[in-house]
Image (cartoon, rainbow, N blue to C red):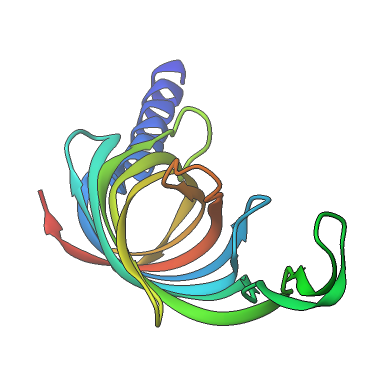
Length: 207
């Protein structure tokens, strides 16, 4: 009886370990839909949405490397400052007296305006599965570049993004992957972006 229970327990553990490790041990293509929000006191990004493709390549039973390419759309709020100007007018100048010799200054005004922008993130980084904490839990880091542009500017910036997520098998080698992340360029006053993603995973074959 004890031997049978031991064998049953061993088999159960083996199944659980295989299930927990299976996600990192497979090559998977993830198609992600993202909901994005700019954060930071001086950040002009408001809401955004993205569509990304991510490939996972296994390194060990619990560690994989991922590569991502995507497109993200943002609404941007900014302040447009009207130019100030000076002019000569009739008045009393404390030095020269009266006449059209007094300089007046109009500082202009600032008003809020809105536009939109597109970003193309290209990143790569590790993904670590944590079956000892919770089956399907994973954490990772994405490093790379954002190629971003609006109607007025185009620039490339550094992309640093820690990620935490939870993946569940759907059967037939497919997965549902839910993740949350924070992305920043470490640029002064730029702030960052928080994102929530839902991804559908398709198998690309074993390692």
